[in-house]
Image 1 (cartoon, helix red, strand yellow):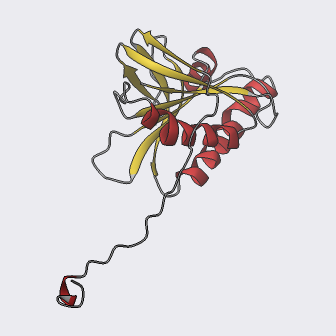
Image 2 (cartoon, rainbow, N blue to C red):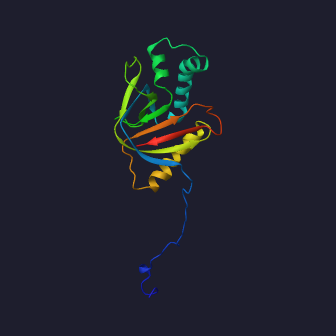
Image 3 (cartoon, rainbow, N blue to C red):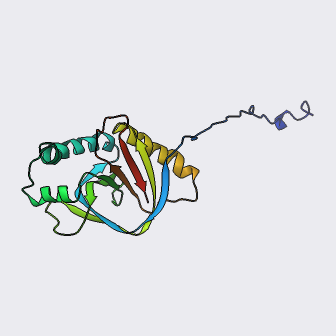
Length: 192
């Protein structure tokens, strides 16, 4: 048959089988409903492409200006901003808020829980409504451990758990007191 109709020959490429195993890492996560809450802090717009380098610089500037004098040197708060930083524990959260119409940019807040009262000039309040949050625990030196956890959440956990959808494009980094470069430093990531 091939000799009679050579133009009817069908060629097939060889079959290749590829097996890829992803995930399998133990992730310390709790999904829980949280009532609405507000945060207060300093808000800045970052470009997605440079954020991983620029946000640590933003934190360094904040720490030099406020954390070192107030917490490490014991300076008494003299301004409304300094009082709010101490009262609301500003620096407990780093919050990515992707609510901008312009693609490739997002808001980032160095924040703490807002307990009401005056909002000093230069600070903003943001409210989160009642919703479920996936809270991931992170142990390791900053910022590397947190960057690795974020990658794992968005590349493995969310795609591997189709029952969960991101409710709002927000990512809360939760920080504890302690030595951030230490191997046993505890932090977390919360995703609504």
